Length: 350
Image 1 (cartoon, rainbow, N blue to C red):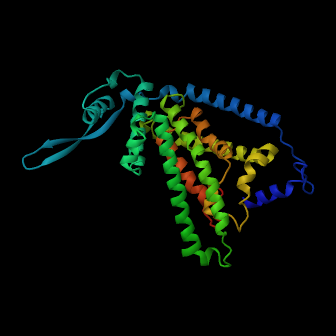
Image 2: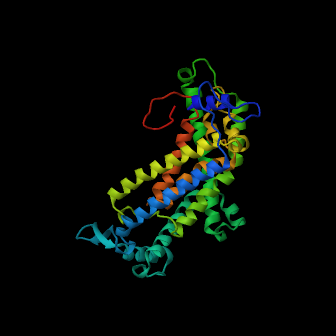
Image 3: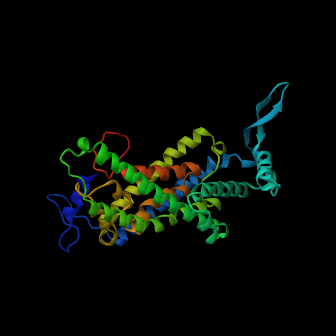
């Protein structure tokens, strides 16, 4: 919260590092102690991963054994009816491939699980690319030969386009409502951020977005290669395991984000070289919805790494993971708007 940030600022001495406040104990974080914490956490995560691999993952259903519900058209006397039926996923995929590519290029029933998953994830990535790239003029896409780009490069461009759209679209909408529509209620004294402060936040954020977009693109590529425990379909593990590992994943992510953030405060190099940029805007008269992504690029990536790292520890539904990143973008807008709202258990809200 803002109180913690204010305490952080007051602890900084003139070139003397962290100072004591009253009866509190002097705290010094070094590279050595930080490395020890990181190593300890990595070993702990490895142990948890081994337990997960030895239990739930061994009972994971193979993709080629799954079934899907589809609608088959049947012609009656007077009308065409759609009859729902259960078919094997490999058979359904073969029909889908024939319909979209004009041929059956894969024998899905004989593919191993990793190859089958990679195919499904790459097709999902292409679908997301089509949605994102419809924002670009066709002539521009042809000029840059977008279809020839590697999948990871197109994933980066998609992330970059959508990140700009979400940041600017959500920020402008949020700012319009809290400052103009409901400004009389949320800011009765008229103490809203100055245009210059908001413009600087936007400048820093837009400058960092190209690097921010690299992490989800890299993560998507690694997930497609099967190096994480991410999976494609909920029925690979079942709804009970889906929910259990979702909350386990979130607990680890919260732990990782908290310690990343704390170390960026406690480690002098982390604050002086990286995190101070974000805290230039932590005063009530400068904070705005646009401050949520106003970080040094490395700082922002470090705080997002737990979302990626934890994919190696727990099975996580791939699309749910991506929707979580979107939810985080909404959340970070909310916690920087200086509007006090009771909406627990969402941490940091208001």
